[in-house]
Image 1 (spheres, rainbow, N blue to C red):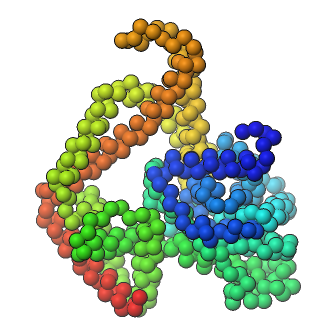
Image 2 (image 1 turned 90 degrees about the horizontal axis):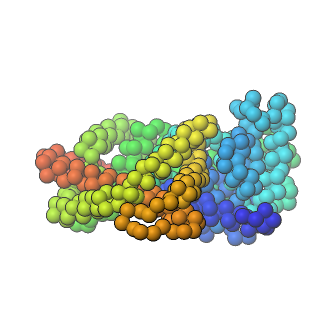
Image 3 (image 1 turned 180 degrees about the vertical axis):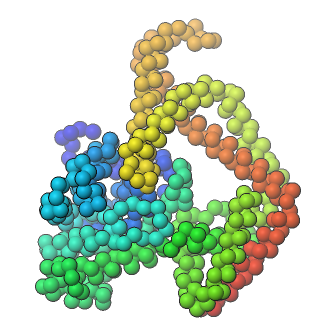
Length: 487
């Protein structure tokens, strides 16, 4: 990328780079609500922060408008990540908890002054583009929101005082399995908050509110409360992971049992459907917990036991309705044959994959652990490091092989005379081996799961029938509760 390229061009190129990076790391990325991001003017994107750098990569890559980020100052010192942050125009933020780190202001007074300058720069950016900020102030691995900081509200206030009319757009980030490679993700842009019409912000134009005083019923703390409520509505946070898993299981069993009673065969639910189903179940649970706490607790216990039994058998709700033996057996035969062909007929690619890609992958994991301050930062750092270290390993290996390739390959009586031809050929072999390696491991996983499902359904029919009856009972109870809530 040329150094004298226009900033807008550089940002577009980096956006495409980040989008490709996300597509490589995630099996699928669903993006909904792009129309909710205003096409004119600017504003703030606010989101929770459950998955480290991956959260920022998804927002930067898939927002329909240019995005500037406010990021923890320590991230600017990480290899590659710091370069990316500076390239997209990110602005450093200095947290009190990071006092003493390299590059951090020496005193609280200096930290506040530095943050004031950063907020001013971000406020100016909201005039024509969007600024993304995580009001929790830190990434985490909890199913609920951390206590929100006031930075997002202060930034919104500064943008207004500067004569702007910023939009405030909540963003929902949802992951199928946050720690898994090649999982699925959902990015949902929700309608802008009507700040001026919100009764909780009445009186926001008073001198005290504009001054942003820390105490009393002022604009900043009230807007922080509004942002918190918006994030609760778009992310559906639960108190503990046990409740979260139970809600997800209820969503899944209701969908599977409903389809079974209609005689339909289900496929994996799209991420948006999963999110909507989870939100409905969670809202119903909270309402019923107020009306009948003991009954709700007993229901959760039964759902948890059903979930544990499914996990022990290695099945999901859809597979309780019977695995079509002949069709599944034929599919597994084809999968096994494809894996065998890859292993027997393409041993060179398998060897290249092991010798080059495996050490590079281990280096990615080591680098992510070494330079990540928290576990949640590792996913995003792995994404970035992988897209640099793996191609770098391919290039080094290709140049080395191209220089050392002086004899014809077995079965051939010639070698390419041009060095660049040998290097390019080896580079293509390295990339192909990585792609086939991903495919091979996916085939093996699919084969293992299919064999386990056939074994379980074929030889443990009693256990499957009992679980099917339990699923039907839970379904009836959940539907009855839904009817009682008059939805």
